[in-house]
Length: 439
Image 1: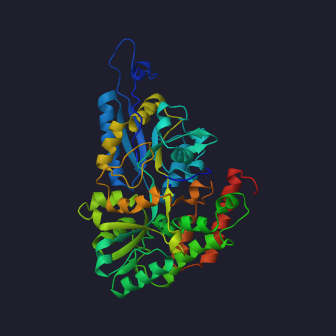
Image 2 (image 1 turned 60 degrees about the vertical axis):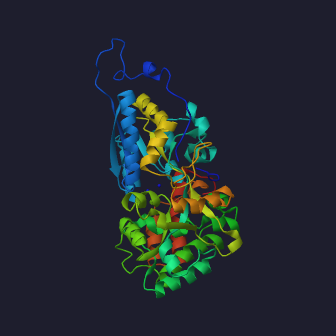
Image 3 (image 1 turned 90 degrees about the vertical axis):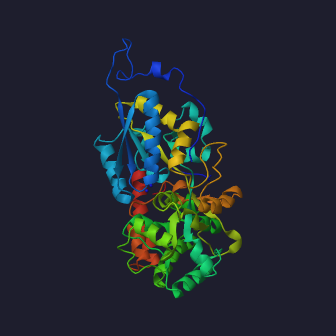
């Protein structure tokens, strides 16, 4: 797993090669006029431990980069969720960060003080080939700090197509239709909604993936929320997102052991069909493909439904990004690594190991014909413009305690209204730390 953001729309890029870069590199280790055999530079890259497919993609690109430039890459992993966020902040604060870091775009980036911690990539030549909709998600004070990893992701529901077919279910276009499907699944003796609250970040998805529906009812909510003119607890459309989360628990649609079940176990339940639907962001498809390659095309996707079938659309996440540590001793080599990562050659390599889980962040990029079935399910929404960004790309506010709050709401410990109020308090602290107007 993780800035006023805009709309939405995997990694490919410019054909800009590196003419003269090797010779002009400022690193004394990389080259010397005497041509001496200096020690090979090693770059370090930190990524989360949630995606084995991405790990293989980084390894493949790094191996090719080493062949071309004699620069090694060592990959380190960190936990996902809030534990990982805190570790990243600690390593940045103590000067112990790697040369390169894979991390969220959007509001979580802004919380890391990118101007202080990361290298400004605004004027790099390859930036012309990266979509503005992505660049907005890694821009702070008009400076671009990241390059895209993978494509846009969609938040919604992954589901087992075989079980849907066996039970005669249709993809729901409204929340009421989804609840009716849940009843039928429950009656068939299966888990209707997979809960994996052991990994608390997964508890957020129902609430976050509802943003398309929030905006359909209240288009100005993100700006009003940022300006302290609207609250989650007192805005009906936003409160509804918490209510949906609470309703799933109240009606007994989750597995009874949801508090002790983790993300990996949830994916297995979905693939096995013991659990039929999993509220999730589409990056999980890469994990399913790695762990259960023969089952990946049995998994479908539908957006989180709202209250009206004619306003059905997808909440989308901009891709995560690679950032360069400003305090790195190897900034020039790291910039070279970043430039290579977004070339067509590197992108193709990455996608052989980590197939796209949504549309590309690179101009004129074509997804391969053999994309996952679930990606094919979501593409019409992108092609027809029926998408909206997740709130974290429209507002710099994303309170750090949201996973704990949604775990409480989704686990029946507090009401939807109480959870929304707690989140408003969480966000208030963050807004004051960020120095936002109106707070």
